Length: 160
Image 1 (cartoon, rainbow, N blue to C red):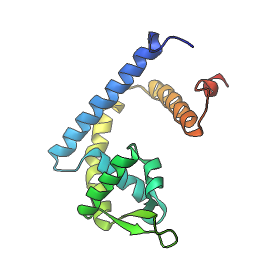
Image 2 (cartoon, one colour):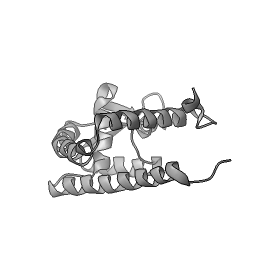
Image 3 (cartoon, rainbow, N blue to C red):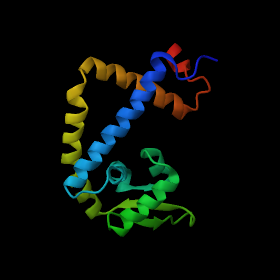
């Protein structure tokens, strides 16, 4: 096995994690300044808005957002309490449940977007060139695809 978290790749990993944490914190602060809910709420509302019939089973929702399943359950509970989503039992599987976007949830997502969009532009897009963005996008997509396909050799996709 190669060296662990040493060299350029290891330092890029550390910068990637730090950049993500710092940028999310700044976006969260901007949303709060506008009296809007946290970024995780946007993520769930947007996933539901894009879904067919604006509803997803909880396991499907978990695949479309960046949260653990336990955190997602608690978040959906908070969104339901706020009237932004509804929980519906599955007619064919009584144990299964759907999260369903409400009109209030769709309206909230639309209220959040301008703040989120301007934050993305100012904190990320304005600080990266098109060439850098293309390279980062390609590398990150390759990592996500490999992780989701369960690739045993994480470098396999890069070696093609």
